Length: 189
Length: 189
Image 1 (cartoon, rainbow over the protein chains, first blue to last red):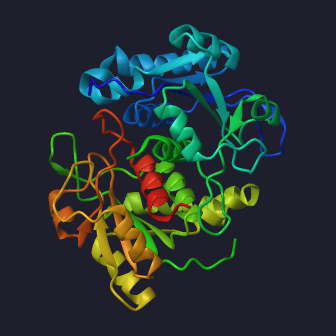
Image 2 (image 1 turned 180 degrees about the horizontal axis):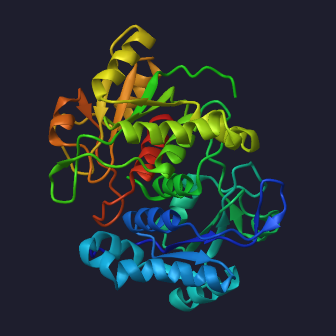
Image 3 (image 1 turned 90 degrees about the vertical axis):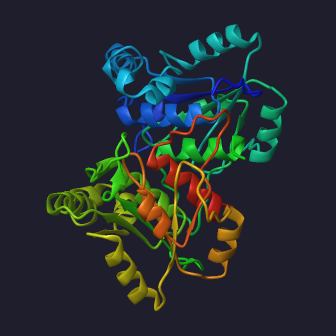
């Protein structure tokens, strides 16, 4: 439980800017179960911090209240595993703030990899990213809520992970499932 | 989208009998997001049916109402991808009913594999099960809600998948994340 992971990986769940169904840029609402599922998967695979990125005060407060219930409140008393997972959640208004905090934490700006359900240029395959992680390179993975990260965010990243293709062309996983699968591909046995 | 998968795989999400935190046998409540996330992951990987197993009439009705909203109601009109995913959800009071329906569908009783967060006897590793699926053997994967499948259900299965181990010994994924990771391990590229 206290083993120090050799890799340096954070995950950011972006609530703004993201696309809506029609491809417009919107801000999405924080979803309770996103925090839980992503924090639990993150803790399982040794992710250092799960960043909830939203510029909205009320959404930041909601996320803080959820986290506090499980880290300081009643939830953590009855469920210490959930406390341990949610203690890795951090809340930040924007991606630049995440990068500044990570740079301060690890002394070097992390490599930023976007995720996208569609194929994009500048793809880095999973085994190449596994190798980066095993070598100790600090990385930040970006995941979009709603209909996904905007083109500006994807194009602004240092690279893009390939879309998760299953069987038959249907490609509409929840962001919770996508985070779990990608962490397993990058850090699973 | 209409490609016929060569594999024959169903997934069952068990709500009774499962364990609670204290190891007692309980029935759990149907969770809306379980249906969505598991149906979407199932459709992505070519799972034929996602079975929601609960003996409780009110919980069966709840699951049916959720499915109907997305397959026949307003939800499916605005989100055809969600309709396609949820059209693969089936509701059944018990495991025997699932097995009878699968045997009728495929003309042969499926091999039943349980999942468990702890190591168990009679483990079949992921690559062996990938080979079974590629060979067309009908399989049913069992996932437990709450604190997981009871020992009786695990011991009654034909085999058990290894627990998903991440890094560092923390092993408390949501069932939604576990389904996504296991389908990717068995059927991902």
